[in-house]
Image 1: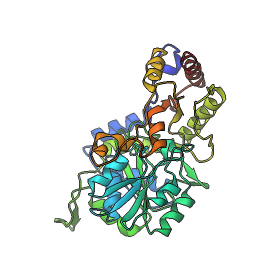
Image 2 (image 1 turned 90 degrees about the vertical axis):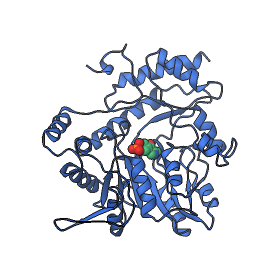
Image 3 (image 1 turned 180 degrees about the horizontal axis):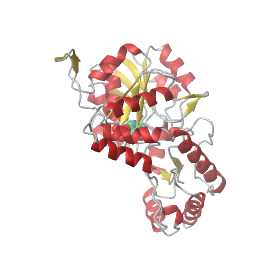
Image 4 (image 1 turned 60 degrees about the vertical axis):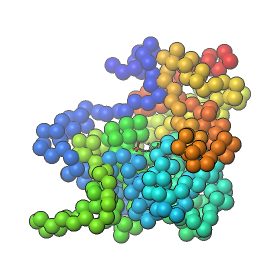
Length: 376
Ligand SMILES: *Cc1c(COP(=O)(O)O)cnc(C)c1O
């Protein structure tokens, strides 16, 4: 049936787990006569809100759209600076440019691979209005330290929690506390609706703008009233996608538990070659979106990927340092600006980790990785 039952089958680094109940539910939506934003989006938002301590949640057609809306809701635009990490998916920094503001990067902590909050604080200027930290691989940042720092400098916080649905901080889910929190439901994330995202808000008063910005700024009143007072995006989620999400949310705890168990097995079985860096062994807060190792300097990542593919194993790259992309180099960033993000961005490798994986799949990855690293 699936790859885990067949040792010879290719093992991808991730694969979504969509159950038959969800597939039947999607078919029902398709037959219902209402396929774009409607009752399924409302149900999805309600379930998300329940997970996030009852806070208001609005859904979007991507996490990127939700991040951009968050910046606009916070009133960030030209002349403003926003501090973020250079080690993330490019969306995290691109949205800052999209709203006309200036990204300011601060290097990462090489152990957690998340933004180093001391360096972030040193990057604060008179123009700094917000910080977008990322809970990379589902490992939360220290929220107490983050919000204390933001408070000292009166910064808005937009948590890029794209990879952190199901992660915890001090016994509460990520999203149930804090300022603005974005989740992504892209196909590779821990819970998915193929493409989608949401914004959790700490302040009810910001909900109407967050809602307007996802549908061209339109507000409707009465039977036929329509007005537009702000230029919005076309960022609404479809009911087809939302129904996938509804099916996924019921399984969040099961998914997270399985990911944690597989991560534990990686710690037991992965042969720590000299120079190989494993992630922090956190089994309390992290939702284990990815299991990433930093390869020894002597092992080029491209070689590792090609040889692992030879063993029938898919390896992911998440991510090269953002500031070294052409778009950002053209804005003045260069090699050497953020040494930790650059080093890790060059040599980080994502090993297979998804809920339907068998324990033996982890063993197979570890055996292959040991062989590939030994060869070197
Ligand atoms: C996936 C992801 C995003 C963007 O989410 P989309 O839904 O793909 O737009 C942003 N930041 C991080 C860290 C991500 O992993």
